[in-house]
Length: 264
Length: 262
Image 1: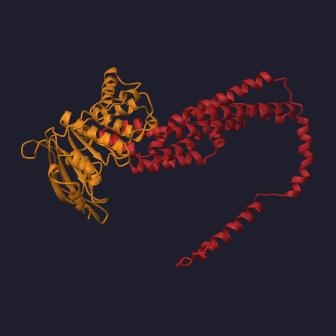
Image 2: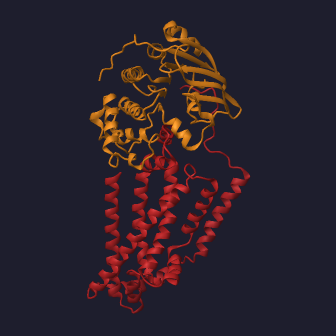
Image 3: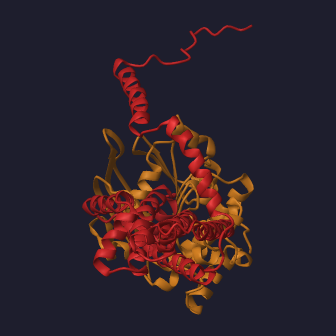
């Protein structure tokens, strides 16, 4: 066997005192978090019979309000489509301003990043409450909430996609004498398009799932139907609604996957 | 396309032709490291000049400073009588539009068609949104782009995506894009460095033919000393940010040029 003339490096690096203390703190916090989250095995076991009762009352699903449920489901999907498209369109300029490589000024970059973080950190249900209070009950409030939620998600990923693209074609267009707008449309957007499409399609899936919940606060869609059914103990009807929501989400995810595969 | 060489075509000498490129006392440092140390160079219209030198000698930096893709720390660059170091905004873009710049890795937009990429060459002289994609462009512009593609022998690939082309073909599309600029100068930064020898010869041959037929001034960096001797009228050797050699290519051999790398 040949022997190296240099000593072998250690398999693991010895952590510094600070790193070691940090690891201990993280481990302690995880344990405390489980306790703080109220996780209780006994409560879970005691709840199993209730779950069984509820599930038995949900089956078989009741199909006598299919027309109303279908209409609410269509409205839910329309909200998701409207909110996503508006959000994606507005995310494009915000993504440009929020990218280090394309932002016209560092202050614009910082302000846009802050705005996007704010949009993202406030949950969609809170946005829905805000818009219900300002533009009234109904799908328009839900659409606006989904639009803001989409911007918070898409603009960030659009900015990152723009930052990651190869700068070579942009340099070539700069050398040609192309202006900033031409450089964006001729090299930045085409190069970032696969990532934009991916993010937009994922946003549509996300918006479809969110639009179901928004109805719970009066922002349109099928959520209100689900809430009424549950409040009135019409569990068989609730199970029908849940089944249709499941079918809608699966259909949107399948469609989104196919579109992404086609465009990539 | 006829790529046959005709080395007997005359090249202008410095004393007789008008100056196309004047570089005066150009300096550029990256941090504490000086790359260009007060470099002077004059190139007359229609002359083909090869820049040689080891990695880090400042060849690429000099080309980029000449078009202000990199800002020089000091010095002046005068292109066809216009001091471009003093230009900003639209006037700088207009000056750049007359310089065809071909990069080592062609720098085409990968998801667009060959024709769209060639059309982009006109964006400097005509900033119109209709030039962004070939589907929006006027017939006149599309025909001009097709003509540029014909000149590099790739008109049959106009509708293809550039990702479907070989390295040599992509570099020829980049040359077609430069021709679409209607340039008076072509600069090329190691244009054949990533190509196989045969594709490299074809591309250099194309540069040579175009520069002679259009009376274009050609300034290219290369590590292929044979290319410097075969395709340039003049060879300029850089070392440590200064010009160590400036000679007509007909009066120097490849073996002598190797000395610049010592």
